[in-house]
Amino acid sequence: MANKEVILTQNGLKELEEELEHLKSVKRKEVASRIKLAIDFGDISENSEYEEAKNEQAFIEGRIITLEKMLRNARLIDEEEIDTEVVSVGSKVTIKDLEFDEEFEYTIVGSAEANPGDNKISNESPVGKAILGKPVGSVVEVDVPAGAIKYKIIDIQK
Image 1: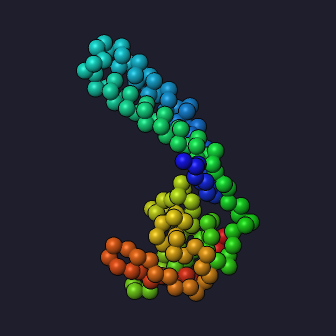
Image 2 (image 1 turned 180 degrees about the horizontal axis):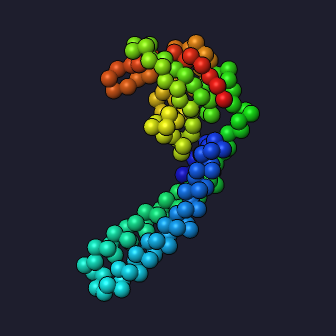
Image 3 (image 1 turned 180 degrees about the vertical axis):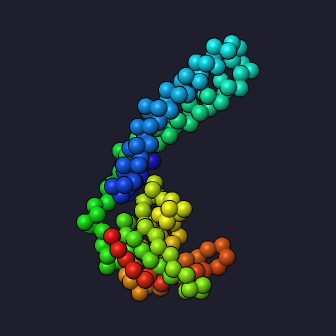
C-alpha cells in the first residue's frame, strides 16, 4: 500500500509535531512508571492496573507510529499558494445553506487536521469535496443521509 500524502497547514504541522513530542517525552514515561508500579504490586496475571497501563502503552506507541508516518508523508500548504479565486486546501470559505438561509465559515484542511468543532473540515469530507475548486457564487449540492443540501459559496479568503 502506498503511503498517503498528508496535507497540512503550517499550524497543523506544528500541532502534530507538538503531540508527537508530548507522547515521546511525557506520556511514554508516565505509562512506563505505571507499568513498573503495577509490577511492584506483585502478581500481574490478575492486575487490572497492569493491564490498563499495557493497553495505554500500546495505544501511545501506535499513535507515535501514526504521527511519525504522517509527518514523513506531509505536504505543507504554502500560505502564498492559497488561491482566493477558487476553493482550495487552506482556504477559509463562507458558504450559505440555501434551504435554511444560514451561513457557515470553514477552513478547508487535509484530513489529518480536520476538526468540525473548530470549523476545520477535510478536503475529503462531502462538503469539502463538493466545494473544492469552485469559485465564489457557485452553488453545490451535497448528498447527506437526509437528502441533498445546497450551498452557495459566498466568500473565499486565505
